[in-house]
Length: 599
Image (cartoon, rainbow, N blue to C red; front, top):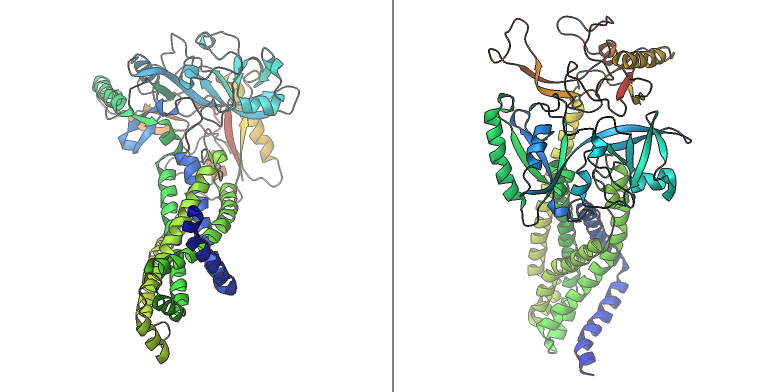
């Protein structure tokens, strides 16, 4: 058969290559293991890159989803929270956005017949589900009417919470459940992969109606997050150009917005973030270097092994074998090694990937979507093919150009592999050494940087310190004095534990982002009101008087807080970062939750 005749030389080379590798099990094992380590490392890291960066988001038309954020040059960030007037401005740009929604993360306590459970939730306005463009699986979604003051508490469950807590019971829609000790009605259930952020398990009304509170309408009250869907045909660059012009005009119009503007982030870039993206690409580049070193190593092994076969190649050459056929034989052998190394590398990569997922920080996004799938296997196959070419090309070209007379003459003198083979192996060794030095230098700098970071003092002792997040239900703690008294009772109880020497409550963890940030926070004593003088900007957090003692933080000047009830801020006033100051009326959140610290 013509087809079989064309393939016969390849099958002969394949059988011959298998016999040769089987006769040298030690060489074959070393070469396969070397390639498997390099291919396995690349498979594991590419699985992370594919799952976190390349795999499309599960939302409908996810490429049109964007996250508008505030640029704070002084804080060196373009991912700041936004003010409610900003969101209202964007909602009016109907030629740019199909829908714009305001949202905030929240934490609620789900109580009832089972054990109480703290659940991550989203406080959303009526346009959130238009932005996500996903109909409910059961019941309905939240509407603008649900955000009106005085409306019955309602909640929409995500598919994850519906299956885990309610066992997929369809009759849960319309049922009353307890949220933070108060009655709330389930009005809908969302399908799988329809909620962003994907760690949220319930959606509740944000409570921003058609007549927002005056505090929410402050241009410097950046306490909201936003998500938007671009109209078809509108690119991120087009929308960004429009928003940049709008932001510049608002910064000129409102003094408190001077120096700020808006940045439009595609949702996938917002989720991953520049730091994680950069880290993954650096790791991928590093393991590609490792694979390149492995290829050079195997090429050197094949070259050294081929030097011992120069007489065989010379005889075949003298008998009329073409150089293509000789080169093909060596490429087939390297391909067999790469194939075996690729198969072993898939298993090593799978185990390495499981280790990466297990030790990954809890805040790594989309880690549950990382797996060895068809795209990863295709990458591994292509990598194995490239490995075969890189590791086998030099030995193949060298073998195909062996001169019979020189081979017998050098072999007769006992020259091991010939002078030119020795020079070529030396070049490969130098290349391998150079690549290894680059990797070792980078690894050494990384370890040194990590050690330097570990030596940096946070400014307070960290040994024998424990923390916990505690929430108080609004149904029982409705006023500031009640919340303050509730946290006081909890910390007093903790202090009476024999092994505890101090305990305190705070609105945010040490070195955290703080509870509030406004353009107007402090006014220096003795200075006139703006614009005659300047405000002092700061992030801030409410604390109990015992906080500084618990943290071991000394007071540089003056004194710490006392137990006298003259402070304006209490640990239960605010439930989300970025809320306003204590003298600005606030809507009641679903339930305050604050860290407690004990030493």
